[in-house]
Length: 361
Image 1 (cartoon, rainbow, N blue to C red):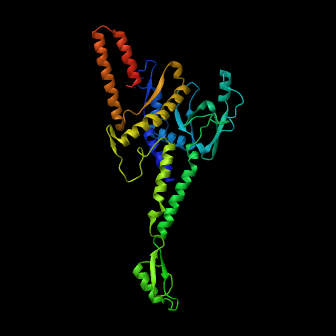
Image 2: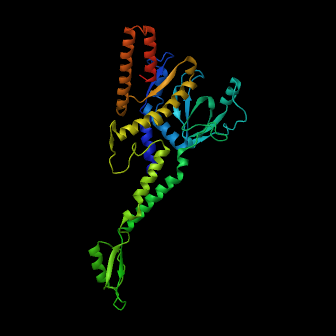
Image 3: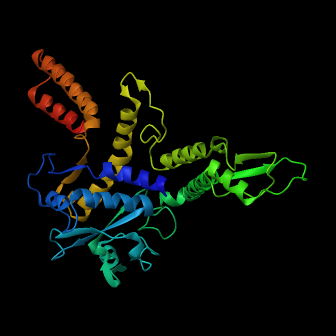
């Protein structure tokens, strides 16, 4: 489906451009982190962009992505990461639980369960301890779905089907628009059209689809003469926008019309809508993924975390400028407070650091 492909690929392209850093418990970046090195080189076949692009597509289409981590030993840093193709996964009822997982014993028992994965016609039993599930919406929204999330595609399946029908209808009508019909307006007493007359008309019309009829009083017209009256483009555009909304976008983010978007006082509506999409939909997905990875690798236990940022993208420059402006104004206020004795150095440093963390600077 061209609409689904366009929307999913658009979102995956932005998602994959994240900048990843490993932060210690004080919020300082850890240089040459083995974890960020792994994420920038996840496996032999993929770059960081390829890996997260693929993950985003799997999340959009199926709702769930399982990241398979290859380790030499249980507590080692993974040697490689792979996204498992959703259609090749058989959960083997691992999500059918009749008890809550509370103790370490419960968790370890669950992690020993396996799923079946088919790779080039070869079946593998992969233990849950080697898998990091990530979700598009949320897991556990329905019965026996602790390892699955609803698919957005299923939610808009009927709309996508309507789009296919619209495109099929347009294709058929375009074909019909090349054909002509001859209408005989005579009284029926005239002779039938002769082959030579038929050939002459065909040469004039540039068509081989002329019907044999009477030679007199014939009107020729297209089988389809006014495509606009079918409103196929309007139906396509309306359905396109419905699917956009299901994926957290709107027509200002991805506009298929020929009309240019207007401008507002803060810049183009397109940039504003795209920034909103990146800050909410894209950033939220990236944060969920980074948190899932950090939790699996025990970083949270050390007070560390993985951070994904899109501030380096050109469209986000206006956001960065606003953050810098806010920080500069705060620093000027702190300077005045220190000069008149209402704020001490330690407090000034602590508050400045707190603001910088809130601004992600």
